View 1 (cartoon, helix red, strand yellow):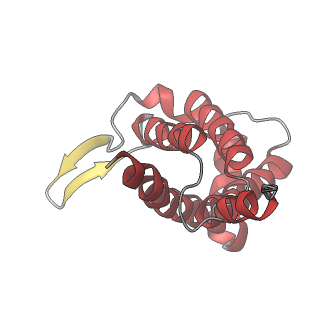
View 2 (cartoon, rainbow, N blue to C red):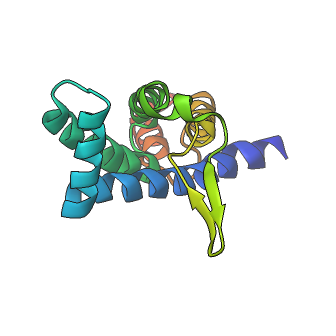
View 3 (cartoon, rainbow, N blue to C red):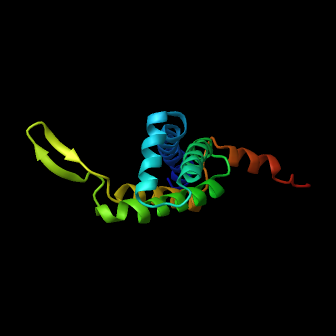
Length: 155
């Protein structure tokens, strides 16, 4: 059971975490409305160099997500994405409280939501730490490279 979980568990985490970062990064990089909203938010909270930072964060999330999904350089990608999540958490989400679904008011049509709290940041961070501990697992570029670069035993 342990061998199975250490082989398949990281792959399951890689898939959902990778897709999540690719999705959020692609909105920041490849949609004008997504990038504009993100840039406006960075400016509103007083981030210096917001224009450059908005592109860098989009690229980190998009390409970091691809690396995680493929299981390529997972340790490096995980550390960079953990730092990304910590900055987002402490600069944006922590002031909103814990709950990811931050209901601000309930009207006849249903709830209205504000900025999310830091719950989702912590979930991403926990999953990335898990990948740091276990490695990329099955069907990963990291596993392929490790096996390919392993010295052959001389018998």
